[in-house]
Image (cartoon, rainbow, N blue to C red):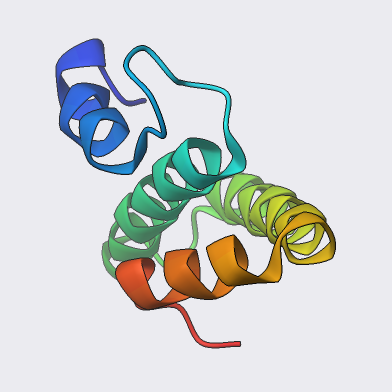
Length: 88
């Protein structure tokens, strides 16, 4: 689980205005960081199936957030993908 200290720099980088934690950009950035952490964890612990299920749920949640952003504002969507280095 991410601590507040780990989340703060990510939120600071992707926030649209000071104190913004609910915008899709911040949420997708936090999910992406957590997905990367769990992916590394699963490389070491291949038989941790509970974590694998959690990872797949996070990937689905991020996909829904990205779909919402692409339907709402395509420019913000493409900017976010390039900043995070995600393929689409």
